[in-house]
Image 1 (cartoon, protein in one colour):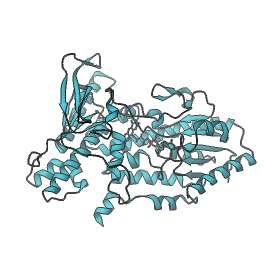
Image 2 (tube, helix red, strand yellow; image 1 turned 45 degrees about the horizontal axis):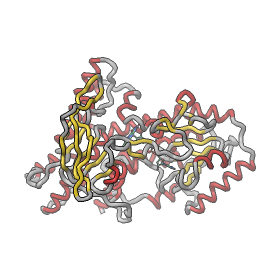
Image 3 (cartoon, rainbow, N blue to C red; image 1 turned 45 degrees about the vertical axis):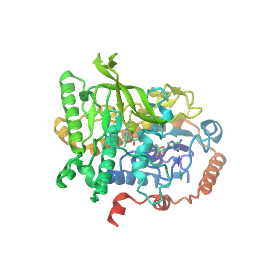
Image 4 (spheres, rainbow, N blue to C red; image 1 turned 90 degrees about the vertical axis):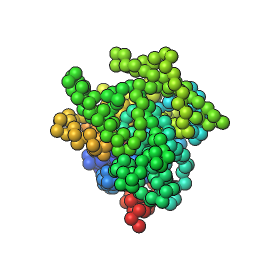
Length: 451
Ligand SMILES: Cc1cc2nc3c(=O)[nH]c(=O)nc-3n(C[C@H](O)[C@H](O)[C@H](O)COP(=O)(O)OP(=O)(O)OC[C@H]3O[C@@H](n4cnc5c(N)ncnc54)[C@H](O)[C@@H]3O)c2cc1C
């Protein structure tokens, strides 16, 4: 079935890829979604920490509904750049248009010389660490195992770095409690470690723990932690107070520490492992963090996790503008040099962070602020909607461009369909989307705890 005569390839099936497929299928355009993983949920499955189980399931439901449409084909476990090159897809395959909705999964490199040689030896980046946290409870989990340690260093400042600090606190406290005969599940600890310990008449010290420390290069009031406008001095002041309150709440509940105005400049090595970082103090000059010479301090720690943002992956053939794709924003994020290739979602917005994106979204009224203060889940949900809405708007324009392209001939369309079906067969996908999803959704922690 192909009412429009067009066939559009979408790479990445999560919030933005599924929304693009939905927008095109509802206008009668057939699409095929190529997704590198078995499940097309992206950050929802592998980035949103697993304690947000309700939000995850809700978002997954939205994606499933969109990708179940009869005009949407699905090819799981197909990775652009591995199973086909960008050049091959663009120059040889012959789709009406190609949409890149592959998100931002490359951790921004920590600017400390030589640090990457310690990955797995006392040092990790955030994305694989949260992936492990989200999945290690699964009976079939075969991915790498990650270390957990007390007194760890987290380098970051945004919501995702607070998630990393929370993961470290939950894991270390849970293990220390278990060693003392108290079995407390992750969901209980995520409500409040402080309250959980209080009920047991214990403190971090009693457990022999120090807690992790989040190092941030600016002031706490600068942390991108509340989706409030900052376009007047009054609004900025209010936003700064809110940021301090958000962080204060998180520190009280989860017992981690924060060192603002510190930037990492060097590393400490011991027996072939990373054993901490050298920091320099900073001051804010004209809104920028400026390192103060002579303030270096060596901080020893068994584990360092860098959580300073995610960037789109560099794929051969896609032109880059620094660390992001080179796109013409005035032409619905058309990839520079290609008439019919467009980038969507975090693949283009990934350079900022959730709160930056939210500031450009709908206005948040004062009455809502208290709610935001307490509700990290609400912030994530808003971020998903923001990306979805931006994709939807962009697709309305991309659709106009596709309409101008001559439709595929029946032979061209049939050849493409055959190609897609061949991939599906090779990958063991029989075309029944929900059957595939049900067979590949792993057991969730809450199900395992209730069984
Ligand atoms: C921890 C965390 C951090 C966030 N950070 C931000 C942020 O910085 N900015 C922001 O606006 N929102 C952020 N969000 C909010 C939200 O995740 C995103 O806005 C939204 O989910 C992005 O959707 P997406 O579809 O663009 O990307 P993703 O959810 O990353 O989906 C991309 C999909 O493409 C697939 N894929 C990747 N590479 C390939 C390939 N080569 N071939 C085929 N498929 C591929 C992936 O497997 C994935 O399914 C964040 C959310 C979380 C939980």
